[in-house]
Image (cartoon, rainbow, N blue to C red):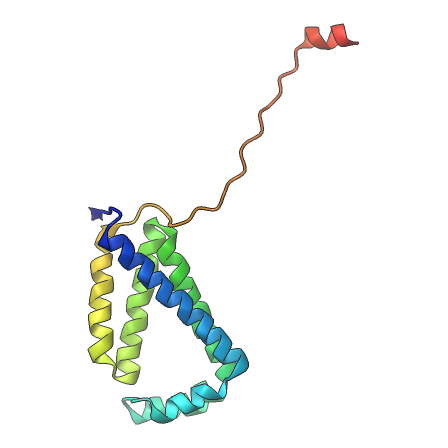
Length: 155
C-alpha cells in the first residue's frame, strides 16, 4: 500500500465520505418526509429486469420509509468508516464499491457506477492510517502520592 500525503488521495477520501454522508441525510429526509418519492423514482428509473421492477414495487415501495432508513443507515456507515482511518477506511471503501455495483446491476447505471467503483478501488491502494477527525480524549488525571511523614505532621 502507498502511504498517503495531504494530496489527491486524501481529497478523494473526503469527497467519498461527503457524498455518502450527504446521501444518508437525503435518504433520511425523503424516507421520513416524502416516502412517495421512492414510488415515483421507480416509475422512471431504468430498472433492468422485470423481476427487479416487481421487487421494487412490491417490497421497496410498500415499505418505503423502512427502505429509505435502511439505505440512510448504510450510507451513514460507509461515510463514517471512510473517515475513520486504517482498516475501517478500507471497509468503508469496499462498502462504497458494493453500493455502486448494486446501482449498476439494479438500475443499469453502468456508465456511472463502474468508473466510480474503479476510482474507489484506486483509493484502496492508499494507506489511510489516521482518522480525519479524532474525538478529544480526556487527559489522565495525575495520581497523587501520599507521603506518610507529611500526613503525620499535618495531624
